[in-house]
Image (tube, rainbow, N blue to C red; front, side, top):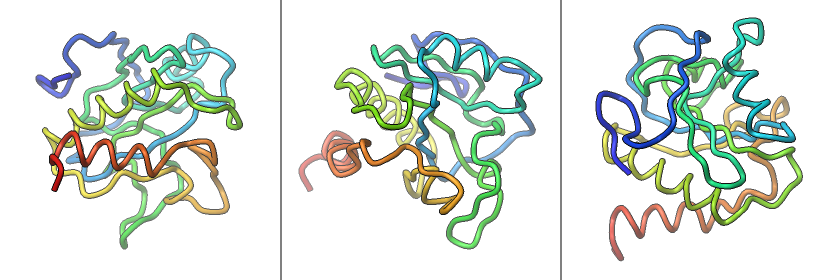
Length: 164
């Protein structure tokens, strides 16, 4: 997977109007969408009344849909802070995974998320990949207990950095 002009090459693209100004992302924030299907989650993020968005949505089938360029602020983090910074929407790329919150993530989903994150890490000075729960503790719990953090981060390191 590759990125050109702040967009994933080959991914479906449906641009949301729920976005802000230009950003220089240094974090990736992982979320679950809480929805029962990908279509409703994407439609919600496209609806101006929702006032929410993310850069990418990944369905349980591993289908990647981009909703905004990676250098544009999306509204996924809400009240948040990390490493002395507040309002992480100004510093992060948001990735939504189709999951009601208690489901085991699918292999296709995790594989797609790894590929997306590796492409992002290759193109932007990403410092950390975090969960919404990390940046909004007590307020948010996603991507949830079912998210395979150890496997996820170790595969990204192995695939991106080699066996060092």
